[in-house]
Length: 272
Image: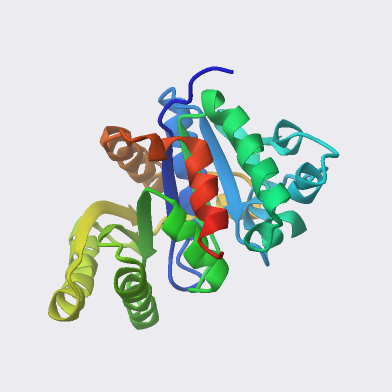
């Protein structure tokens, strides 16, 4: 087996539903893939298989079958647009925090076998701050928090930052303003969030840009296509490409804990 190489693990989260988190995950994955990165997208929204619906794909196998030994993780992967491979949400994912020691070992082994075939793992989490969401956030190296200019989005984003910082010592968050009119509005939204976090928490928030409100996104959703795939020159698509260029410059993990099997070890170990 080849030596494992560092894998960038990015959890995309939103605190609340409706902020466009899954759209960001899918299109960021496609943009990175177009730049030559090998991308796997893990749909970790356990209750709603959002990515399946967004892209009009249907999965024939799930992670439960991997754990039972009926198939390999490679059999579960679904080919998405732009070369992105998807691990779909399934009943198997829901059990990831309740695994037996043997299942832990099997899951770690399954992911480690993919380690030499992936550069970036994007984890599209569910909305909210459930135990399952927190598990994925704790396991990832990078947290990309998607916010929109609504009081509930800012309040829920703050609640998530506070929980991850105070309970788990996470102190770095990358912030993406979504569904805003322009860069100025995106920075204004980021300012609102930083003002409240600076008063009460010891965290570093980094503004990574904005994705504008774009009718092309709604049209793409109706067509069950990714906007980057259906409308590559749309304003939202260009903004996602700019985000991908930033992500591509983020430092890769240098310690062994940057290897893919360590992501899974942290994930399944965070609930033991």
